[in-house]
Image 1 (cartoon, rainbow, N blue to C red):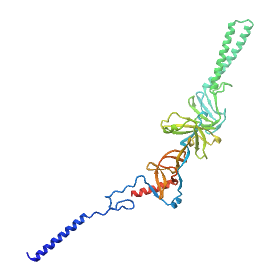
Image 2 (image 1 turned 180 degrees about the horizontal axis):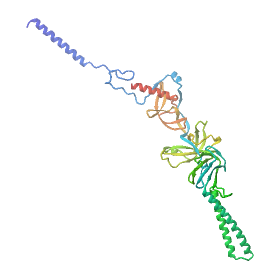
Image 3 (image 1 turned 30 degrees about the horizontal axis):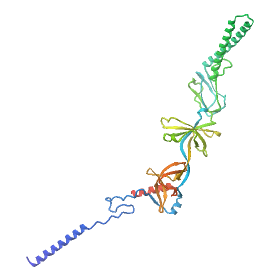
Image 4 (image 1 turned 90 degrees about the vertical axis):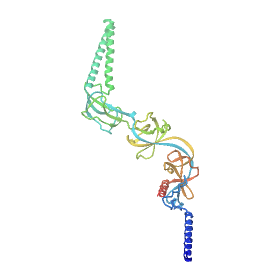
Length: 398
């Protein structure tokens, strides 16, 4: 081997050693640390996981100027005296104790209907006329009973005179007395039957009967029409005295323990201004088969006929007053991910803090756990903060 060949081999070996050393250094050099972006995402791509946020911290950065610009009101959580209000849906109905459904006194045919639905009626006013063969027979029976009574009275008077003069026997006088008593009973029974059914017992024997209003009120239902065949089981019309009405509220089964007779109530009806004061007069002992709710009834005077049956209403039942240590404005409580939260003021803005609400009077709500008295919070405009928090969470999920 020549000297040049030996030198070339040595150079190749040195070059090979140098390359091997470089490759070894490259494999041992540590990989650069991953740097998360502003949203917490790893720059290395999908292979890296998102760094989880600290549990319970849901903050919104907001300056004092931004708070004022958004109209967000601030106040401290504070003690208050609450009178719990149970808010219930309700409806105005007729007072069933002041309502009468009229039926025909006997089988017959409607001759004429003298009133229309919604018409006011006075007590004793004629409502409709019916022609009934049964009524004619009852009047004939009453007239016959009256004539027999008159004959019995005449006979009794004659027998008494004869007995007093010792002309007739005692048993004749006693028989006349018994016949008079029986005639009086029969006449009374015939008249009472007509009177009980609202049929005029006087006058000529006739099958025509006039149905009259038993009370003053308003015709709220009138199924009867002229020419219709009717009997004692078919309602002809319904009259209700609307000077008083009922407001019936639906009470869920789990709230029945809070409701009792004598409770004060505030009733709001449709577009009528203000609230009407009332008292719970009755709480139904049975739940509805379909609604699974009980009925709480409030009886109200209906001045100027403002309350109309069928109107939708709402009822707030008022419980006993109680002093509670921590309360917030009811509108301040928001629901996020099925949790009740209050937005507490922080140096950077606001923090959504989980709370456990308690009793409420509709304006202020007790905070049982999660907030201390004196803590500043967003008492107004909290829905804007909830919307901002939702946007932030959506941005982090991108």
